[in-house]
Image: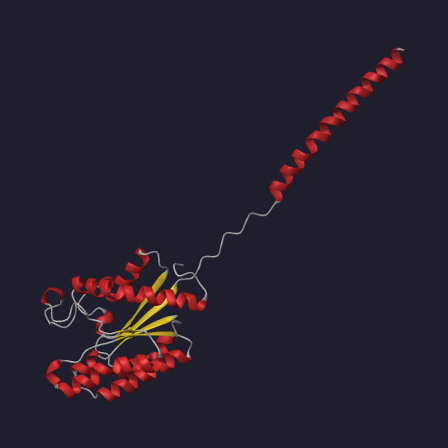
Length: 240
């Protein structure tokens, strides 16, 4: 009887230990699984849309600081609206449409997604042949499209002292090109700023910082509308 009682107590102790280990196993296993489970991968950031402004001194920011130029101010305005867009300043002061065409391959090396072509002001100021400017811009647009780049066009107006024939030929070339290539046209890059002393530098041609802000504020709806169209065409978020 004593032996039986001792054996019974021993068996009860063993059974209790086995029960405790059985209950503990899921907890230990779960802890081990939690420790060895791989961490979830963070989502890959969406690369910004690369918008280049191929232009002249208006894009380059003649007479003002780089951060006050149209590309920099436009990028800031887009970021304030939650748009993930990098605006590249491809402006060269004094550049003509011919100059823009000559450096196009160099600019394409930066691999822009979209190019806003802002050229022609210097052609008009020098009284160059509007037909030549139209041919140059036509070649620029064609080459950009052939490279798979989305193209937008910003227009310019000729000085009125060159006569009605020149004005008609020059002013009309931007719409003709936009229609031919089926691309968005912003009719006049200096809308709201041209000939207003409050918004221009002493030369009466180049916008001061206040003028740049007016240009950007008026340009912004055009840019955002066409960014939405671009985003839909490449199936990416309109506000990346």
